[in-house]
Length: 113
Length: 347
Image (cartoon, rainbow over all chains, first blue to last red; front, top):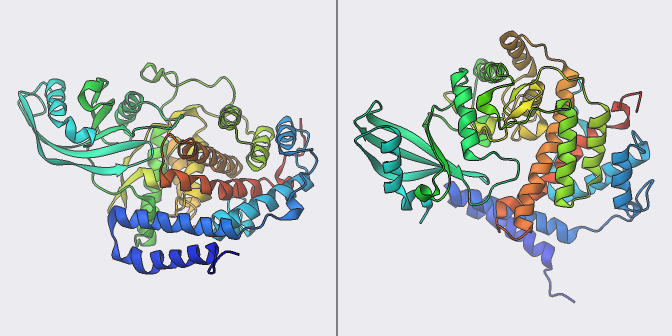
């Protein structure tokens, strides 16, 4: 068993120290780099805590990801609700790791007006 | 030691030759103004003695970063684009001299006049502005876009730009698919959006010079006014509305989602001013189409940047993190292309 605290806890705590205590002491390029480092650690912490969703394991309407991509490109899955739904769920899972704040975009479409 | 410092004396000799001057000296050390993933910009103050340009000049030396992305033009092409834009009355830094001799600074470079302002999107959108100031900046954007879009093919000065044989939208779909294939990336979300873009492609309109990276981060802003359109390396012949959409796309608002024009202002002000300046009407559906494409294109550029890190060619945290903007870009593109947004009649 891994010695506690585990990797997610350590990484999240390190991000808090960087963002709340270190970044404020810096300026210019060093500040920018510290913010990037904090972002990288935050993403890695979410990657460590991420558990692949089982309901995404099966690709809709195709045998595997390669055939799905080919079928989309060839136009045999145009406008298919089940395919769109699967892609949205898959991307939602990825966005929740890379940048959870962007999940809010799901309810907005301001170019439609 | 950076190439700019190491080659400074050779650089001054180059300027002396180009400016027909008796002597050129530099004042103080060159300062790195910004280091992008694609290029470096150095600020240099020159004292020119003799010749038609005698006097003190604040200039910027622009050169490739040690490695550059596939879609960017060489510096000489960017210099040619800048010159065409300058002569067409676009507000750009005046292009001065270009140099292909790698013996001077180790890489090709060009020199342009330095202009006042800042070109950092996240800072510009956070500055306090009255509604009238925001509107004036949005109208500046519209005016500049209209001037750029008044340049059309053919133009012998820009003969390195391909004239697309297909409608620009379909040419872009093809180029994006080839880019994904070259990267070896299988991305169902981007493929979904690209297939939508293929079947929903608008009829071709005017073919004009498009800047292709006209967003707040590439516009020099001083005292809430636009003082220079920078970064011409992606320019191509294309659909003018693609530039309007790139400026408005959600991914280029720098966190100010509530202000659709680049995190600064309102669509109506941009559209009205652009229509008045260009004589071209804006169809919102065409803007929306190119906003979907903006997210796809930025996702592919991000994949290319991340690949430079992943391939081991260039270990770089900024490039690595750029790979993590891809999910949200694809998410936006897929949300904008829901099944009910597909055209009724499908080929």
